[in-house]
Amino acid sequence: MNYQEEYREKLTTAQEAVRAVKSGDWVDYGWCTCTAHALDEALAARSGELSDVKIRGGILTRRPAIADVPEASRHFTWNSWHMTGVERKMMREGLAYYAPLRYSELPRYYRENLPEIDVAMLQVAPMDSHGWFNFGPNASHLAAVCQRARIVIVEVNRNIPYCMGGFENGVHISAVDKIVEGDNPPMEQMPAAGEPDEIDLAVAKQVVPQIPNGACLQLGIGSMPNAIGKLIAESDLRDLGVHTEMYVDAFVDMSAAGKITGQRKNIDRGRQTFAFGAGTQKMYDFLDHNPECMSVPVSYVNDIARISSIDNFISINGAVDVDLFGQVSSESSGVHQISGAGGQLDFVMGAYLSRGGKSFICCSSTVKDKKTGELHSRIRPTLIEGSAVTCTRANLQYLVTEYGMVNVKGLSVWERAEALIGVAHPQFREELIRQAEKMGIWRRSSK
Image 1 (cartoon, rainbow, N blue to C red):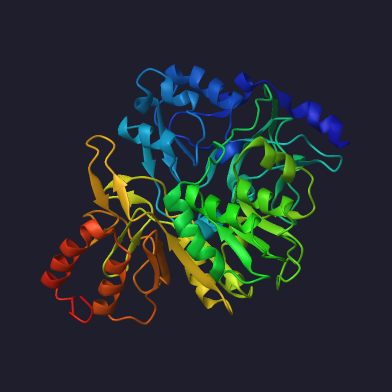
Image 2: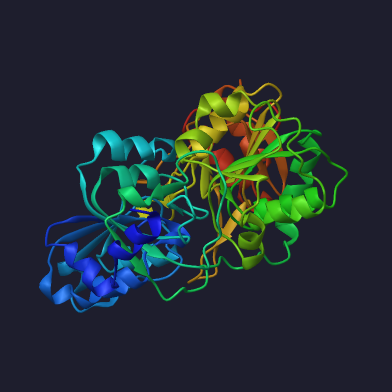
């Protein structure tokens, strides 16, 4: 049988395909911009027949249809590996829960720690002449998902870019049970980064001079990393490389400006390596069939040993809060889950271990309460009770706010308190000093 004949035999409708799901099943929806679409709608239409269906996924860019059925939480439970605003709202509705992880370990979770998946359903690019369905910009952990699923259903979408890689960036038709041709919705897009504000630029202007020619970059998501990318694109830097968990529009802009060649990378020379990507159509067009870009599983990209083997590795990430001991929370505020751990700790540790490498946690010094308009310091005496520690105090290297940059490696607790208070908003410094004194970590060396 040739691949086209096998394709026709396995081709079915979304409505028929989701009949494979039964009450109590564990179902995987894929990841980020390749989350099931037509299959999601078909499964939602069956909600009255189902109960206690447990679904895994993450980084939702749109609200799934299963969240809007009557008494949704009785029929479905969403389990997220990394939350977005869509999932936070579902959590408030009692429909979604966060699953803590080190993102680099996720493929192994599926292969060794989780029970067998009953049904996996995900969007893929059209089958190529060799029988492969490409995962698009979401290699991440999807090969492991397909390997562990009893039933694999792919939803073909002609708008998904074909992302070249090397391994585990697609699933072969021989491992697929059912094929659905969806409605070919456009790729889910992240809002285009607007012009950076004064705070973003103040932080970026401190970080960019720390980046040498030939450095290899990892950028987190958000306006601040994008501001740094913008300044890099306008700078005199050259021969930069990319080895990043998430591919974002900033890398496209830097490539267009001729800043990225990857020629000084110790591994994957000349290629921009990433685990998943989400951005605007400009980014998806850049990734499509681009041999310069390398889509691989997150266990490869986020491996600390691999990161540390790349010289001059520069890791740039954000934070929700930082306390005077140097603990960083980048995923929650108290027990309120905001996003997820992702690979921040992997990159913080890997960058520091790299020869010439540096790790930067960047944030504004304050955040404004949306309800009251009250200003709060992101640098706190201690993290809010219940906040998850994403980056431990032993691992933080550089912290950057609009008021300065400090390297806390090697500093005692009183030195850390002094350094971190020095980059806090001036409005909060006296109170932070008082709290540091109460905790016994303040030495009046420079007040």
